[in-house]
Image (cartoon, rainbow, N blue to C red; front, side, top):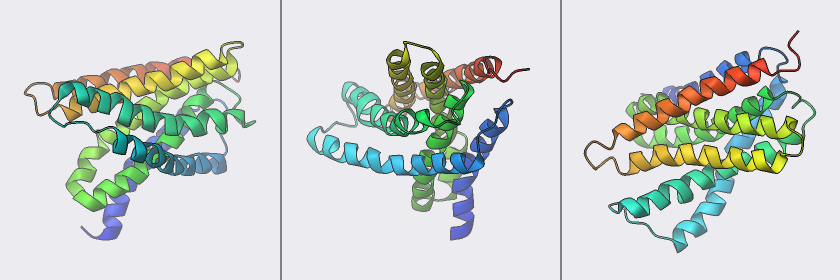
Length: 226
């Protein structure tokens, strides 16, 4: 497969999910230019991830065959760092944009940022490991990032429009996304233990079900419903 085809393969899942969420915004859609900027913020969030991860990985080493150390690796060194990097742009930049005017927008912006992150990550993986990896990630890693973002965005939407609970829901947004991300990664990291790889599917399916519910709840809570 040539370089252009690999690029299209890497871009396709993130673009498709971004479009899906855009179309789910039934009542007052966000400006396309702002969604593109949000996507770019997601790409920039990979730099923030690297900025945090490099010194952390240098200071704290974990063994691949130690299930306790891999728990720390999955939940703290990977999930919390990556989700914080995405959370930063949603909560501290897009949160204050005047177009963020209904709870569902929290999901929209979180997903756009997350897809920017996941797409850049996907490009690296696909060019490094080939088309087969791209196809696998199309139905695993990229949708997983989207579900974590929807869960995060649900609570950021509540933070924006629930008075006196901004810090509470902001913290819940980051922590829940990190927990689901960490669970997915943890079972992936210890999948060498027979039978535990099923945990990857279980965590992904659970976050997918919760994401569908989050989308429905915020669609129903829009102030633009006539």
